[in-house]
Image 1 (tube, rainbow, N blue to C red):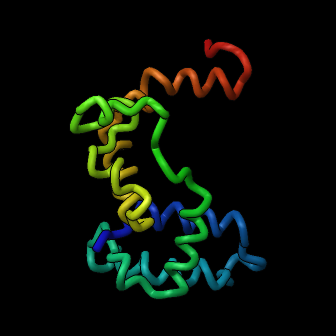
Image 2: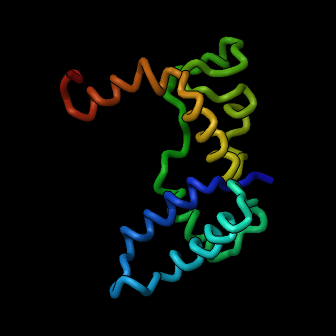
Length: 142
């Protein structure tokens, strides 16, 4: 089973800190408390992943709420796996990851996102990232 990386738990914690700030600087929202327990245990045991299957239900629900705000797929509609490449030049996923993406668990998808982001050599991270900026601003990037 897939693991949820500590950086995703940190992102979920920050999401909930912004969404439900502490009213007194001490009290945590239930979602934050659930995620903080998992995070603290990971730090204590020097783990960088927590298995999706064993995640406490309340912490998983809080993490999943954050996860649902992230893009589902890294696809940029330029798929070289359909041309026989083992890894897609557009998004960086392997042929198997592209093929089985709809069946993958959220943690498996996040593992893939983490790998392709760290590699950073797919077109989505270089050639076409400028186009995304152009589209957002409505004019060419400087």
